[in-house]
View (spheres, rainbow, N blue to C red):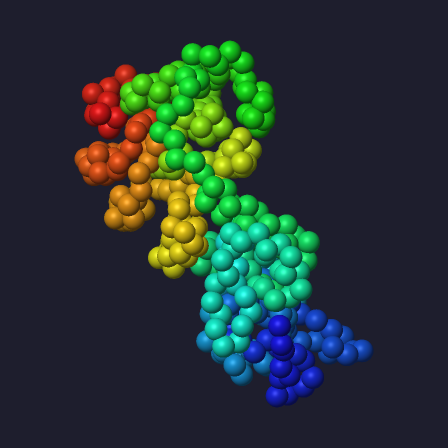
Length: 372
């Protein structure tokens, strides 16, 4: 990254526009106690938080006074007091979540490199390539192109190649040998922890119903692990090659982080995409996470909210799903008829509704209609 000098000193700043101000501090600039100045922490447009810069207040005022004023309103300084340190960044924003694209650095034409080619594992180390990085805790709209080839970046770039190769080599299967009836103990590939006996029974029950293409409702008390059972069922389905089609999970927005956490624990071998965020984030996901360059489906599981399933139903209808899982069906009050219509519009082999036992007892016919 090339930097330029400011007009009023020797400081170096990126040749980018200010995206936002995310911090403030007071620093000593001389030997006297009064020799202090305010500095603001600047996030630059199209650069990651690794490039955030502490910039003197005078420079920021000269370049973007409005942002300084807005920041001061948000974090006012009491008269006569020393400004406290403000830093809105979170540590995970500096950690790579995943690399989602790769391209050759060509000045005249930044065309995307075909990431599934194994030859990328060689030349990528010589600085010819840059990688589109999604950062932990940030949406896809905050993804940035990076060309610094450290070990962390190269490791996640290798995983990008593996995801594309795996998707292109996936064999289309719609059925396999019966698994549910033969499941006697926890498979070794379910290595996220030790399953309880009733959870193993639940997984076996789900597999049996999936093999018979019979839609079902899984209802129990809170905290008994419906999410884990559902994820373990999907892991079994993929490992036993019962079905190669992708899976759609629709859940309340507040539960998406929980689904993500459990998938990372129990289904780390699955390519799971959280389809969330603003319009730009979802556009980025569709561009980089949906298909390989040969138009094969890239992901194993797509997890999204009720609201976005409604908004982007036209996107979801393009896929043929092996399973559609609806979480916390009892919380769907204003979406029941719409969700029922949405579910019927999805081409799927199997529907699973997760809910609470008390909700099933009270709303049996209604919940059953969502699985019909």
